[in-house]
Length: 426
Image (cartoon, rainbow, N blue to C red):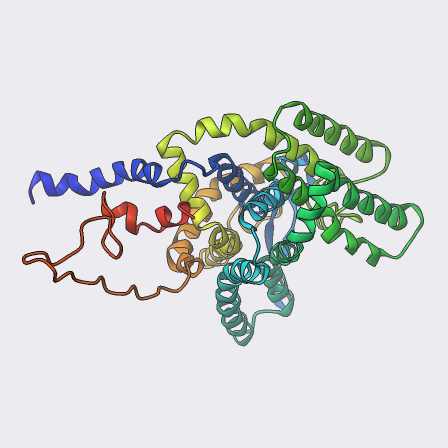
């Protein structure tokens, strides 16, 4: 093997970030993609850190129960403030929807929903077969319920996102008339709903109104952002300070939980359904995200950083949908060895936290394997390109010049064929 052939793959890998950087349109807001990538990482790490599948052996065989470290170690509550990033998802979602919607509602909505539903259908099909296999293998119904809940529970996010996407034209109209203050309307609905639930002793089902109203708040802020709001730092700073102050007041004096994620065994969850505390916390997060935008934009000028973010965004749905399956694959696979610390043990001490941190690279490696298998589900089906016409008007000329219709574009082939490059050009 020659030296040139040995160094060629390495040089391609080294040049990949530069090629992705060169393929990115100048008008693309890279900071928005960076925020989406950070939100994805936050959700994944949050789930991996606050979910413990405790294995126990009894008269009815081996069972697996979902336990939260936040239940016994409440001093870890600030962790939920870092990894609860759903508001950033909806902020960026509103921004992207407002930028892409220019009319043709049905075609626009169908395209966006199909893009969401295709990878979900693959996940559902795979897990339908797995669930049937586990049931036939004699896995207890309680264990099966725990496993399926972990896999399917995150899908509520996509349902809400689909509803808000369908409401985009109305949301854009509302923001056009009221500006960023449009978010005050669903915020008021959330406050009234919580007053009925907690202050007036109303039925608990009333809280489900907040599932749409609560996440509509950051979605509207994202639309306002896309329409030119928040140009300076003053308003985002007020959102950050006001959101933090309101959340602290609700926790300290109104009895809301301090954790921004659900905790097994707790009477009230800030997330299921959303409460006023998680919404005000989301406003603070949106303000912080807007303040960080200039720094993120500068960071994204680095080709390596941008290539990583662009690749993560290309497979955002795959990472989101399959991260819990990766966690379960490692956890269940570990049972073949035995009851492993930090994987099957109860989260009751700081030692468990250290042990769980050691498992994160293993979860990530398994997610990389699942990504390699399922990430193609996010791409639309390939369509056959029409063959280029051959010019016969001049002798010796059997193809069109580079760059002409139907001919390969100039430049390195990786830019024209890379899925990442194709995605960021949209």
